[in-house]
Image (cartoon, rainbow, N blue to C red; front, top):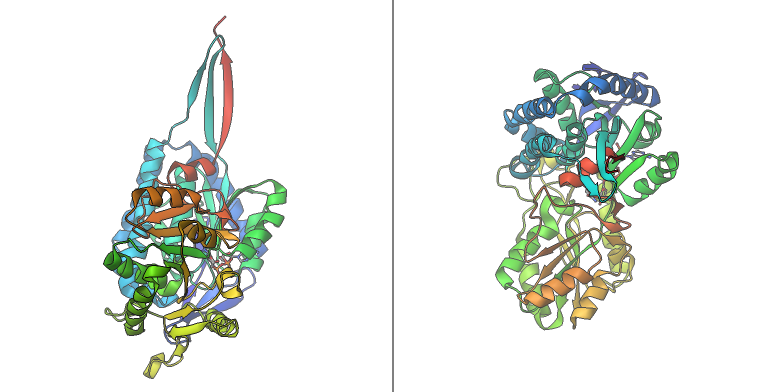
Length: 482
Ligand code: NDP
């Protein structure tokens, strides 16, 4: 059975405790590998390795950092199929999705920020009668990067890459639920000769080793993606130590559909924005708000298509809806469907666990679920479910649509469907979210700012925003005009 080991100082190590966690294959509910169950002493060794490597890495010319990161990107690309199969097995997502989205995006993340290292520049200001102010931007030191299970390598690399490009060394922890491709990344780093100690990867549970990374005095910045409750805990722990924090948290995204939209494009995209990756993408739209005059037509067409979505073996090339990530997550999603029913919701399709036959009979499968008849104030519409469950609601005016869209504690993303240009701009401005898609969904340009408002997070990733986060600006004021 594969042993998923820690990687620090360029070498692999078991946890100091000698303890292991089971790693499950969600497609069949069976243990298929073991994970080093690390703790504070492992985190400390990784931080020390990162501190040792920092002076040399941060003084390398940007072109050298570019070369190392490009090698890492090529190392993943050259093994894309192996990575994609591993990601699918570890997470339950269809292998076709891992192959077309997750792993190529991890490659892009390293390439994008390798190039970013070469293009990132400081600013200078001429000050009349005085001279110049210029801003030195230097890396912080050791960055802690903590990521969730839904897009394992994709989100892991989205943090690590800008941290490295800006000249930091990194101690990173993937979710213990999906650690396999992070372990493979460590192997690739070794194979391509990535400098020892620059990228360190530690495995184990959040409270046992994630928290020690966040509060370690040697870690100057923490970039975290995960649930809002965990984000709050990190603020209360690491925030009070005045560390720099970037927090990408939960969401309850609205998908607003006006009657004048391009119906066919909206319908096919809404299927994806509702159920891609079994609804386990922080950007999925889980509250579908439809203009009343279009509601019946939309509901019937949408439900008919969702009913035909086949849940299947993630390893099968034809599967588009796989398993959810874990047994406890499956139970959580199913419990929310029960809550929805108790709140008066009507399940239009799905609503139950799916049992596939043979070896997969214990896998964690849920039928894509559509629910109508709920108020926006109820728990189903207020709390993040993070699974293949969407609710339908109506509105009569633009103002009502925006009010309903904004009626949760979250503000990550929103989708708008309309052919009225003025309304699109107006509503995009009025919706409280960090990201708004108009007549599309999940189109990503890596240069754009990414993040949420309200309880969806603090700070922005993407483009030079991430490089800014991973550097400390220092203004130098030089007087020479006298
Ligand atoms: P969690 O918050 O449970 O975990 C995220 C990561 O934090 C995991 O690696 C976890 O470790 C670790 N962790 C847990 N407790 C601590 C702690 N006290 N200190 C430090 N690290 C800790 O989230 P999930 O993994 O369940 O991911 C799902 C959530 O992520 C959803 O809420 C989703 O909306 C959000 N998300 C947000 C995105 C965004 O960009 N805004 C993108 C993707 C997901 P372990 O699991 O190993 O215990």
